[in-house]
Structures are given as structure tokens and as C-alpha cells.
Image (cartoon, rainbow, N blue to C red; front, side, top):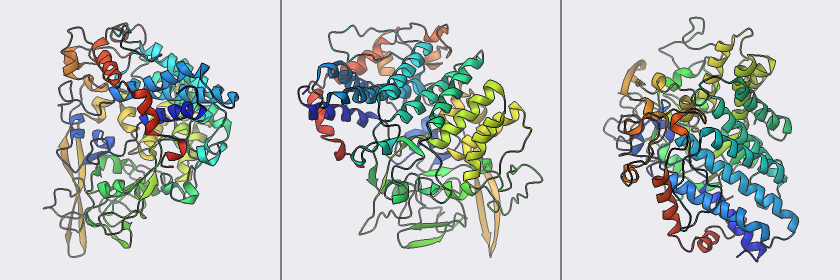
Amino acid sequence: MWTTDRRVREYLNNGYTYLLSRYNVDNGGALLASGSDEAVNSNLNSNVNYFNNGTWSSLKTFDEQYTNLYTGLWVVNTFLQKSPTAVVYPASDLAGLRGEAFFMRAMMHFELFKRYGGIVLATKPFTAGDDLNLPRNSVDEVVKHIVTDCDSAIAQIGPAWTRDWDAANWGRATKAAGMALKAKVLLYYASPLYNTANDLVRWQDAADAAKALIDLNKHGLLSKADFPSLWDYTATATTYNKEVIFATSASNINTIESNNAPIGFTGGLGRTNPTQELVDAFEMANGLPITDPASGYNAQNPYAGRDPRLNQFVIYNGATFKTGSLTRAVETFDGGLDNVLTNVNSTKSGYYLRKFLSSNATYNVTSITNVRRPWVLFRYADILLVRAEALNEAVGPDAEVYDAVNAVRNRSGMPSLPAGLSKDEMRARIKNERRVELCFEEQRFFDVRRWKEGETYFNRAVHGMKITKSGTTLTYTPFVIETRLFAAKNYFYPFQQSEINKAKNCPRTLGMNSIILSPGGSDAAGFQKSNMSVHFRSAVAGLLLLVSIHVTAQKRISSWGDREL
């Protein structure tokens, strides 16, 4: 395998398949957004509800990515181990290929870090003969290693952004991707969940990392007109567009629509139902929150004069929706075409998801139309908000903070923030900007955790909007959908009980099984060299059972061009 240039490259390509695409986290069409205060899932039996009902624990895990990510780490570590003596032609390509592997290793460790905090760092391809009784690395060590791998990727990958590659290789890792990942991991490290002493140097480091990407001057924001199609790689204007810094491979599918479209549109399942909490976070078009008496908000005409992104991201009563040749106003009032009370898939909140959906996709018809979309892992608007948040914490709301936030707001048609905000006021506005701009993109689920505000936002009731129609008059009444539970243990993912049972000293994550672990740095009790060997050993043993993985790895992607680009 390592004696043929083609096989070496094919092996590296396989590593990309372990990156996480997140349009369907429960095999029933759910988004992780339904595990936060952004949405509820129309399928009341979905396991995504474990996050909300107090049952999420070692006995009921969900979104278990442990084995998948460590298997991916085994693949990229094998490449890093074997590639120095492998045949690569021209030989000058080797450094760049290794840079891609360093990026993927950093990305997989980051996905684990987001979920578990301190983890076992996989720095080599473990074998059955290795001592797998390994300690959990501290948060400090994990972050340092991810940053080091990002720096290696930035230094060794040639193309600065996707279109610096030749067209056949669009979508591969770039310098910008390494910079984005570095900025995000440093943002997490600076945030209250991990930075209990509020070390301002950490915030400055995150701000500097985001600025390095901005100063690269390769990425930018899409126009207001193109922005709704950011995730659509079928559209010429947005294929591998400048706002997407890094994404998974683009799948040619219609399931995003069939899973999430309103029920009255050729049998959509309406899975992701935005909450009233999210809808209320969208300001009025004049830039004032709806709670401001001067905003002009009318509770009986609640969607008029709002932030344009509300209509771009959320389907509400009276909004126009299109699939194929069917175009009409959505009816989510009681008894409307999209709120049939006898249909189990009817919206539970009075709203449906619009973000990600394409009006060109068709489903449940004789001749379907698919649309190519990736799951976007990093985009430029997020990096601008990372810069703004980190810099505000480090030095306060200076002109650069305003510039970064206002760039995101102005793109959507929203006015700039008012001058003279305090640091605390700016922090609140940045948090709300992230909530609105990045909704449904798996940011809120982890943002609230890194801000250590889970008890505030996730341990409460979520609401919907009940709409009744009498003649031509509509009456809007907020109502409680469900009351959710969040405890300190829910800041991190639990390990499976079946793994814990294999040894009494198997570690728990924060608060699981009545063991409270501190989420701080290397001095934190819970993330020192605590033994997490059982779960890790099981994950590694599982992948080592795939004796022919080095062969099958090649078969998953025989060439970069075989990906759904």
C-alpha cells in the first residue's frame, strides 16, 4: 500500500469520511438543535429528547461518537506514521498531505474535547500489543496538542482556501481551515466552562487566532441575496463559496427537505420545530429587541418588521414556502394545512425549519430532485463573531469588536449596534448574534455549555405559538410545549454504563454517576491523570477487530473524485 503514490493518497482520503455530518443525528431526521432551546423534535420518541428530559446518562447515551472518532484517529495516525517512508510523487507533495492529516487529527480531537472535556490523546495508531490502560489527558494538554496540530496544518498545507486547490480537489483541508479550528478551540479554552479564573490571555489568544484568518483575506461573507443558498452546492453562485471555510463532503440528497418540510408539502415530516425562545431572539428590523417598548413589535402581528433572518431561517404562519411546483403560504394555525392536529408529525411549536432547505429539492413524488449540500463545520460569519467575543472579553468593546459584529448584521440588512455599549452589554449582544446567525448549526448546543449557562437556558420550559383563526382574524397565544431539565452533569457527555461496569475505576464525565469532576485546566481534579482506560480500551479494541482496515480504508474512497462533490 505504501509503495504506490495512488494508494497513499487514497488512504489519506479515507480520513475525511470520519468527519461528522449532522443533518440526521438520530437516524430519524433530527438535528442537535432539538437538544437545545432552539427547537423541539416533532417525533416525541426521538432519542434526541434524552438531552431534555433528564434521562441522558450513562444508561441512555446519545450522539455517541467515541468509537467513530477514535477509529478516524487510528486512520490518520497510521498515515502520519507510515507516510515519511511512503512513495509520494512528486515528493514535494508529502508535507502538504501530512498537513491535511494533522488537520484531521486536530478536528477529531476537538470533536471529542467538545463532548468529553479531558480525553485520551491519540498520538499514534494503537495496536493490540500496546498498553491501552492510558490516563485521561488534562484540558490544558488536549488544547495544546490540538493547537500544535493546527499550527502544523497551517504551515504545511499549501492552498490557503478551497479554490486555491484545483477543482478536482475542492473541499480538502486548507490553511484557513486550520486557522478556523485553532480559533475555535482557543475560544472554548477561554470560555467560563474551562477558564474559571477568567485568564484574559486565553481570550486574547483566541482573538488573535481569529484575526490571523481574517487577515489571510481569502474568505468573506456572501451577499444578502446569496446567503440563503450558502449550503447549496448545486447552485453555481454558492458552490464552494467564500463564506464556507471547511465542510464535509457534499451529499446529493433530498432528505433534509423530506425530514423537515411542513407536513402539508408532499408529506414533509416537519422534524425540527423552532421554539418561541429562538423566534423571540430575532430583533425588529430597526435593531431593537422585541421587548423594547420603542421597537414597534406587535404581539398580534408578530412577524412583521423583523430581522430578515427570521424568514430566512424559520417558517412561520403566513410565510411562503416552495417545493418543486408547489408554492403557497404556510398555515400553522390550528386546523391549517400544516397543523393538522391528527397528524403526529404536525409542528409542536407553530414553526418549521427553513435554514438548509432548498426550494429546488423535491421528495415523495414520482420524479424527485436532489440537491448537493455539505455540513458546514466552519464559516466566516462564525469567525467574525469569535473575534468579536474574544476581543471584547480581552480588551472591551473597541472599534474592531463593533466592526466584526456589524459586518455580520449589516450583511443581513440589520443596522449596526448602537455606540457606547459596555463590555457586559456587548457580551449580551454578541451572544444573541451567535444565537440568531448560527441557529441550527450546532453552535447553540455547545455555546451555552462553554458559557456555563446550561442551568439558565436549558433547565426551563420551552414555548411555542398557538394560532387560532376565526374568519379572517388570527389570534396568537404563546404556550408551554414542555419543561426541560438540565443539571451540572449535563455539561459533558457521559460514557456508556456498559463500559463503566467493566472496571470500578472507569472515569465518569462531569457529574455522571454522582461523581462531580471539575472542568478546569491541568490542576482540576477531574481532568488530571484520571484513568479512563476502560472506555478508551474498548473503543480501540473495537477498531482493532477490523483486521483488514488498512485495506478497506482504501475502498471507502478510491479517489478524491469519488466523493460527492
